[in-house]
Amino acid sequence: MWSVGSKKVIKKAIALGGGGARGLAHIGVLKVLEANGIKFDYIAGTSMGSIIGALYAVGQKPEVIEKTLKNYFFNILFSKMNMQKIQDENQVTSARSLIRKAREFVKYGSQEGGNSFLSHSLLEDMINTVIPDINIEDTNIPFACVATDITNGKEKIFVKGPIRKIVLASASIPGVFPPVNIDNVWYTDGAHVNVTPVSVAKILGADFIIASDVKSKLKTLDSLPTNSRDIMNRCNFIANYLFYETLIKEADIVIEPNIKQISWSEFNKFNLMVHEGEKETKLQLEKIKSLIKKSNNPISKCKKAVRNLFYKKDLKAAVL
Image (cartoon, rainbow, N blue to C red; front, side, top):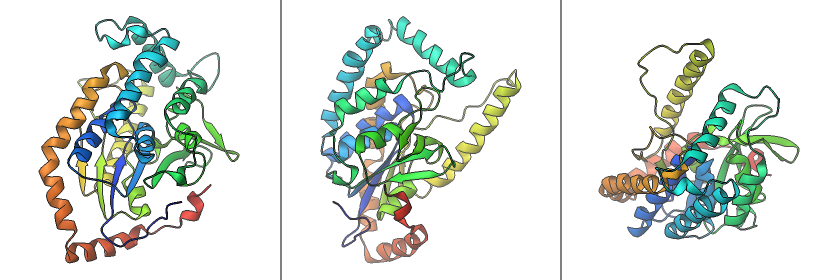
């Protein structure tokens, strides 16, 4: 098992955020970083970031992750859902129909009752297919996963326990998938408490953190929402967005692929997501290399050590 917080040299981490399909951009980010020799001592993931983070943490190369997930989304998954046409962006009638229904369920709920649009079997099957059956503490690279404790509203940082079930909890979008029970506690998507888990990377012991931020964009409205529900949703989104913008400032560098206008459900844009992740990372590559080099000097190390004292937390509460 890896140990949390042990330090000899500067430790680098990547925080992979939540955003549904937009999280596929993490693959492009990792491809460019790895191709340029930038390795990580820790990985923190939320929601879709937890799926890709888990795969990277167990030792899969970004190119393998891309191939594995593309095959699953475009062949295995969509054939099960009768959505084979999803690969062709001009022929996505069945996919859009399902996506529209899912969005309506999330927005308005169901008069027939039920706590989710889809059963867990769909997401669980994907996770069990692509992620090995090991404990999270046994990954090649130390990995922490964020979920939301739906009973008390608190952030849960998983560093021990079955990785498949933990990732399932972190990635279970409320309304789309039901909550996940782990040790008699119900968990759901971690994006509601820490959408891009920079703070978790600090807890693990990182000195230098790259954040891959794929949360949705705060759009300017052309007109006032027509009902009270939409106004309340808008205000809640603004509050959450500003809160997350404050949290992410603790990263040394933030990579924001140009995909924030794309919906969380547009998995048919797989190639675009990966490309935009690569594109934005290449644009920031020289800056990343420069900051890493600068962070290795003694003065920077001392400053970071002092700053990181404020992020010391008791991990016992986060361990299963």
